[in-house]
Structure formats: C-alpha cells, structure tokens
Image (cartoon, rainbow, N blue to C red; front, side, top):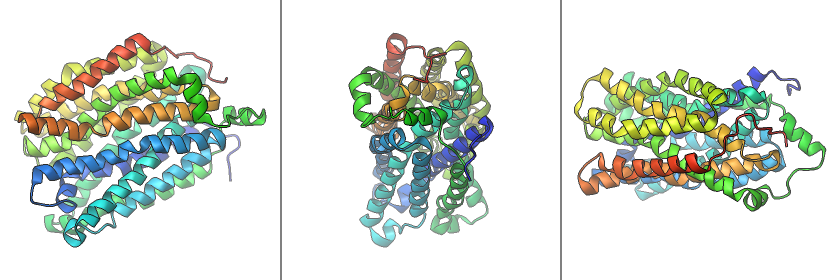
Length: 428
C-alpha cells in the first residue's frame, strides 16, 4: 500500500536504504578485486591480471551514461519512484549473478566475458539509480535543508564500500583460506538478493514526488527529456561533468586503487586490506552528514571546493605514508583521511547537480552529467593510476599525473563556472 502522506524521514530512509544496497552491490567487486584477478584471469602475468581486473571494473562505469539516458528518460516521463525501483532490482540480480559464475580455471575466457557482461548490467542500473534517489529526496526536502537530507543518500557510497569490505572480511574470517578461495568469495555477492528484497519492499511503499505529480497534473511533462536537457541546459551538463569528474578521481583513488596499492606495496593481505578500508569507510559517515549540513549553511560550491583542496593537499603524502607503514591503526587513519576529502565533494555533489535543472528534466540532466563525469573519469582511475605506476615503476606516479591533474581542472571549473544554488526555487 502506498503511503500517500509519507513522512520525510520515511522518504529519506527508503531512498537511502535502496541506494546503499546498490552501492554495496557495486563495491563488492572492488572489495574482492585481489581475488577476482586470480579467479577470472590467466595466472601467467599477475600484474596484467590486476590491470584487466580494473578494466572490467571500469566497464561498469563506461556504460553508466547509457543507464542515465534510459532511466533518466523514464524518470522524467513516467515518474521517479517506479524508475528507481527497477534500477534496484536490476542491480541486485546482476550482482547475485556474479556470485554464481564459473571461474577462469573452469571455462577459460568465457568466465571473464560473463563477468564483464554482468558488470555492464550493474553499471546501467547504477546509471539510473543515484540520479533518481537524489531527485526523489530533493523534491521532498524543505528548501533550507535540501543538502542535508540528500546528504544521507550521498553517504551511501562509503557505507556501501564499508559494508562490502567488512562482509568480505567476516566471510573469510569464518572460513579456511582454501574454502574462501574456493567458494566463500561468492557469499558477499549472493547476499545481494536478500538486501535487494529489503530495498524493493521499502520502495514499493513510496508515492510519487509532489513536484512531479504537479508537473504531470498540468500536462507539462517533457516529451523527450534528454533532448530538452541537452538543448537548453548543455552548459550545466558540461559544468556538472567537470565537477563530477573531480570528485570521481579522488573517490576511486581512495576507495578502489587503494586495494591494489595496499596488497602490492605495503603487502597487506586482501583480507587485511578489506578490514582497513571497510573500517575507514564506515567511520566516515558522520563526516559526510556534517559536510552536507555545511552545504546548507556555507553553500554547495564552497563545500565542494574544500574537498578538492583537501584531496590535492593530502593524497600524495598519505599514500607515501601507507607505502612504508605496517601499523594497522596508522593505515586505517590514513585511509580515513583519504576518503575524508570525498566526504566534502560527494556530500553536496548530487544536490548541486540536481539544482541546476528544472523539474521537467532534472532526473535526466543531473544523471547524464553525474554519470559521464563519474563513468569516464572515476571508472578508469584504478587502471590508469595503476598503469602509470607500472610504466614509471612508481606506484604513486599515477596519483600525481592523473588524480591531481583532473582534480585541479575540476577545481578551476568549480571556482569559475559552478553557480551557487543554495536557496534556489526548484519547483519550476
């Protein structure tokens, strides 16, 4: 039964839980990347297998703009609620599918191809999910607290990463090393079915947003939302791509490449790396909400800029520290600080992007900007940073030559072209 007069708390809870599940599903791959490189690729060249693992990871990002186009269109034409229910179910089924795949030792390259195919489905689903969740929450939230409430959805990536890492850690802790390598690695993927059922149950109870219902009531729904978004708001799409890219390189340097770095440089085991990253990510949650709260007081642009500056100032020194330290507490604190920069960029990124577009094309406009920026810059970050490190025989070279360059370009765009949308009337 739909809740016609839903409380704001329920709206945020249902949106957040669903998005959390999608990020958990997406990040399980990153959490298990050292194991995936062994199980789904040839063992002849471990370094190449690691790069190929992250290239398959990137396929899930490259297709995210496709998901943004498809589900953005549906979200602006059919409605926000039904669209992001579909994305949740699609993500859950594809994630569970990875947990059922045969390995390279069993079927050869067919295993690699199936893994890439399911990552593509995951990417298409996630391409429609985040824009839908942000749009839904934004259109319910009071005007003076939009960033704060959307901030709960923005906090789901680190929580999803943390839960996926800790699920991997706990699964391996109760199994022998041989059992986990043989079949235990499948458990975190298969858990997606249970989580997806929970998310779907909550989202079925949601009603449509008041702003979209009002738009539909007047017959003003856009006929081809994505065409209208590009025709009328192309400048904001370009600005949105740039600022999404700036966040993306920080985020996937600190939450994806970090697994390869921790296991190959200071030589933490995959289980230890998951414990380090999972603990650091979950500890971030209050910082994400705090940064979102700041977004309603200081403005979206300033909070985003603070995050980029923090990342540029700290990433290289922190990675240098991680390369020499074998102290578990130091490692957790260093990764906490790495992810901390993204708490400022991501906590207000969705709000800032969604507020650039009117209701008619909000889902489409913000989804395409977000997913092109995240997909083409963030998705390739682990493989590009890793490849630069291998080529120059310095695991930190990619941080300086890729992460820093993209982040600096995004900082310039934010300072020169990103408008401050705090207090903007989004009902139009």
